[in-house]
Length: 272
Image (cartoon, rainbow, N blue to C red; front, side, top):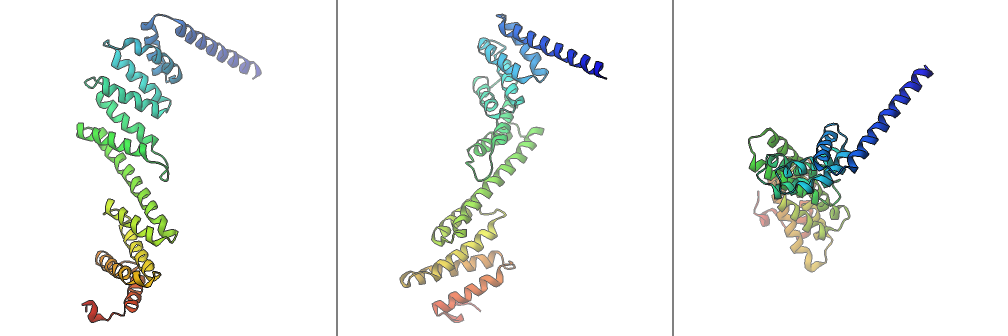
């Protein structure tokens, strides 16, 4: 067993040394056609660290030639293979700018969006990369609507939009959770304006009513009536949109308290 293990170890070491020796030979070569050929071979073998280094050197050499788009394409794909999504996105986008009519344009447009999709961060962080992904993927679906990749792009766009909606929801409800009801009214209204039909709409409208009610209830006398009237308007909007809401008893109790504070009777409200 030990003899077999030693044999395998020696064989493996020979392969590694030979491979490293070959790669060093390629690096030192001044034959750029040879380097380009070897770079593609390393890429096909998924040895992306080696292919990136070689394409980085040879791609600029082929600028202005018929191989330029292909060289930069494999350069970008090598970064993608390494999961360096930012570098890959930059080079895919560069290909679109420099070689918009190349055979790689369609795939590059998709991959720009895909890379930024992979870069899209945790929901509470800055979502600039999410916006970039949506923009690139939307452009892909507009340019190539009937492709199989367009369906994948639509799926990614939906997930990214859901993330942005959730982030907006978290931001909007933060002030409510902190019991800063004046700021909560502003943030909740803005979120409803920007995302009027999201899955968070009912919760946002409920919290907007509660924020207005609590703000009015705790206001000084000169501001109380105006703010409570605004809360009443919000109550009507909420129960009209969600008459069977699980919060209905709660909002009805709050509404009754508003009427009491305003000294209103049913006939004053013009309702049955």
